[in-house]
Length: 482
Ligand SMILES: [Zn+2]
Ligand SMILES: [Zn+2]
Image 1 (spheres, rainbow, N blue to C red):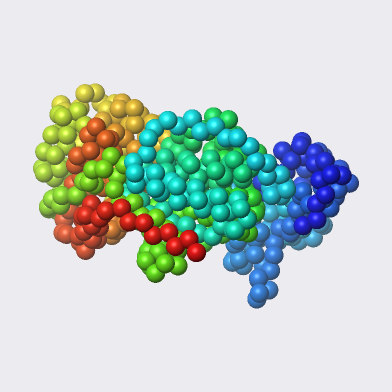
Image 2: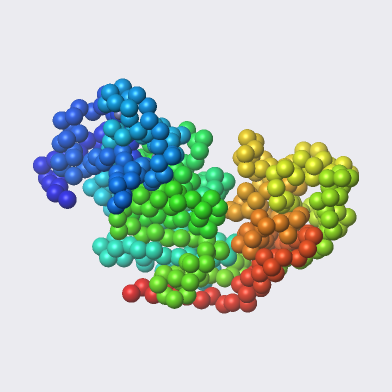
C-alpha cells in the first residue's frame, strides 16, 4: 500500500463518516466530494469494493453477508443504474445492497495510533487466570510486532472468569492502536459484557452493537457485538475475540462465520473463547494445530456442581392433561425458594412455557414472596432484556426459560433445574452450559443442578462425565507458539 503521510493529512470528519463498511450512497456523496474521496483512496486511507463478487464458479456472492444462494437474490427496477438490478435478500434487514452499489470504508491500518490505555479493573486473577491472560497478551504482542495473528483457543469452564482473562490482551491491543471486536452469538451476552468492558476501559470508546440497538456506525475502538452485527465492518479488526464459538446459531450459520472473518483484517488474531469447543476444534487443539490454553477450574477454585438426575415420570402428559408439574420438581423448588435462592428452570420448548407457568403459579403461590417474583421468558419475548435484568437484581426469584438464556448470564447464587432433560435439544454441550449457570458466586459455590427427566439419555450421561472430568483436571497449558 502506498501511503505518504508527510504530504497528505487525512480528514478526521471523513474518517468518522466512513468507519466500518458503508454503502457509497447518496448520503455519503452529500457529505464528501468525489475529489476528496479519490484523494483519500489514492493516499491509502479509504477502500472501495464492489457490492457483489463472483466465486470461482461465477456465482454471485454478496460482499456484505457472503450469501451465494441464487434464490436469496431478488431484482428490482433500480433508479440508480436504470436497469433491473439484482439485490441481496439475505441481509436486506441491514439496508438493500444491489449489484450496482459499492462499499466504502476507512482502512483502519492507516491510522493505528499507539497510546496509553487505562485499565481500571482492580480485581485479582487466580494463578490459572493470570497465566491464561499472559499467554493471550503474548499473542497480541506477537501480532503487534508484525509476526501475524492466526487462531487461538481459550478453553475455559463456565465460571472460570473468562472476561477478566481477556482484559490484559484487550489493553495490549488497544495500546497498539488496534480496534478490537468481541463478538458473541447472543444479545444477552452483549448486554452483559458491554458494561463490564466499558467500566474496565474508561478512556476507550466502546460500542455495543446488537439488533435493536440504535448506534449506527460508531467509530469505536472496542466493539462488543452480536455476530450478525459484524457485517457492519470489513477488514477492520486486527484482534477478534469470538465468545461462545459453539453456540447456536453461530456454528450452524455460515453467513455469520463469513461476517466475522470479513470483519477481521487479513492477518488478524482470532481468539475463540468457549467452555465447550466443537469437536473439530477440540481435535485441532489436541493435535497441536490450534494453539490453545485450557482452564478447567473456575475462578474461585471450587468444583463445578455435578448435576443430579431425577426421574420425573411422564411430566409432559401430566402437564398437558392435568396442568400439574411433577412432585419431585415441586419439592425441590420449594426447598430452594424457602432458602431464598434464585432459581433458573429450563424447559425444552417455548410452547410449554405458558402451561408450565400456570401450573407453577398455582402450586407455588404460597412459596413466592410476591406474584412478581415469578416470570417466564423466551427468545422472541419483547420483555426479555427487562426480565433478565430483574432476575439479576433479585426481583424475580424463579425464572422459567428456554435455552436462549443458557449462556453468559450470571446470577449470583442461582440454582438450576431442567424439566425434560431427555429432550433432543439438550445436547451434552447445552447441558454443560446450563449446569455452568450454577454456583458462580465465590461466597456460595455449591450451586445445585438437577435434571428432571423421563428417561435418561446418553447426552445427560456425557454431560455429567464431562463436568466430572473438568473437576478432576488440573490446569493444563498447551500453547504451541511456534
Ligand atoms: Zn447480503
Ligand atoms: Zn442498480
